[in-house]
Image (cartoon, rainbow, N blue to C red):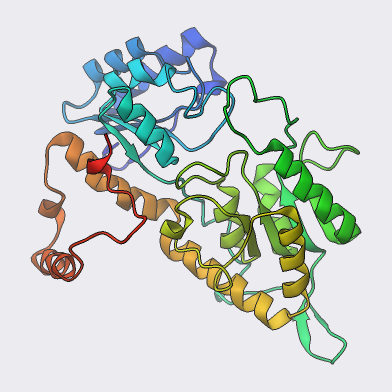
Length: 361
């Protein structure tokens, strides 16, 4: 929240037993008097309605209380949104990185539901640079004597293996088997040049701490992305942003409305539909070092300019203003406001495929 020099304080709720957790949150809010309480909630019962009401009593009178979810799991999917109804009524904003979630919640009467995509930490997930800002990679000479980047892996995948039936009881659709199939296909053709990291694989694979995962992407030409669910609007794992940010070429399973991310096949990523197509695309681009690096660099630029957490906070700002009943234009300079109005006049209708929240039931 806006707390002077403090600015932001984080409470990690998993660090506390339930009784102590609620107390710790309320005490922190009472001391800080924030204008924003932003709760990343992906588990039923992590924060209850009573806690939200207690927060409201001790926070700044202008405080916006927002819940946000950036993941899909067995207890958190469009088919398991009931636990968010009472919580959504108690909060000012109920935000999701899946637009399908937004639609479901609004159909359940949570009219403060809105879309906010997940971001990524660009201080960790970035291209490796030296003290002058120049990108630095370990290099080697290729068969023609040209200096090219040296990689440990042609393709890498960082993520856990989910058994195909693990989520079937609570998720009407999931892609656990598709993930298994594409990983197996990559293992068959990639051998030791396919870097596989995560829990649940047979034989066991190394598990890379989150704090070190960027180093795997630095050492890989291609980063493979496939989410647990690939049929939800605007939803994908934040693995996608991390791959892009680190400068590896993104090889991703398609998902609905992915163009809203700025992703273009062959320009800043490669998009596949089947495991066979994923393997074929990888083979083709690995045979062309120039194309591989050009697509990877374009992807890194896209991520830096559009998908960092700093950008997400700019996207959050007008939602906060709406929750407070304020005009976001009030925060703009006269010059910026004139430019916004000019652009709006030139492009009055939203492009096809971009969600218009106000039109969702």
